[in-house]
Image 1: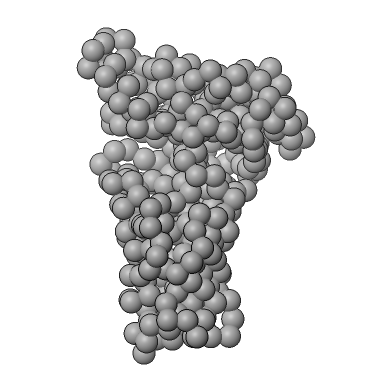
Image 2: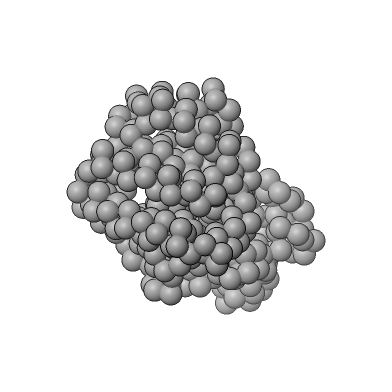
Amino acid sequence: MIKGDTMQTSVGNSHAKIILIGEHAVVYGQPAIALPIFAVQTTVRVTAQPTLSEPLINSPYYSGLLSQAIGQMQGIRRLIEQLWQQLDDQQTAFELTIESELPAERGMGSSAATAIAIIRALFTFYHQELNQRDLLKLAALSENMIHGNPSGIDAATTGATTPLWFVKGQPLQPLPIDLQGYLVIADSGQKGQTGPAVKSVQNQMMSNPERTQPLITHIGELSQAVATNIAQNQLTALGQNLSLAQDDLRALGVSNSRIDALIETANQAGSLGTKLTGGGRGGCIIALAKTQTDAEQLAQRLRQAGAIKTWIQPLHALHTN
């Protein structure tokens, strides 16, 4: 018989993720690198509510009884229902509160981060051990409902502490990192358009492979170089390679005028390298800075240029040694 903690609030945490390099090319077998972003957090709190007949959810998108959560909360509802049945044979109700700094539909792993934090909070609430394999397996429950057939990179990275190397059809691999510097993430205010962008690249690949394939291949080569850059503290080279990847992404038509304007602002403000991150045609950009002061100045300039939110991730926080 497993009972939740009726006296205390149990907490589960997760964080954002960004694609450092390799988006779109990863669809065609090239490598991509994802980074955990600890500066942007999701927190879930669980408190027993034995007077209720079923769990109560409080979140930015829905507040009410679990059974009535529909739409974009359906994947989360299914996850919570499964965990409730799996972990509590007495079905004691609880209140689950989701607090997230991650914007939705910006390529930062919002839904996966929510799932990871919920799983961690409920396992803590029921005093159960949780390994990484089971964590990702459970997170896939809600991710499959929301995204259909996700790669797993969002769930893995929002629960990870190091960069991850991703090649389609292969297991995710942790990457060594020894890097001094700061990454600025800026939200354009536009939802990313991953589906249409992926379809557009696919159409180009079919209609004009002579032009498109070299761009895809070059992004893959840049990903290989970036893996070396982050392992050997090559900040300047990293910035150059990120900007080269942006040139390829722009040539593939997955940027847009809003993203291009923010990138130009960052470059004029002294960014070491700037690119979109994720599916493109909206979403976020990333810009590389050498110092905290440089990063803060970049972030300020980007907000002045219309970014609705910025975050700064110290890269030394991702060290593996």
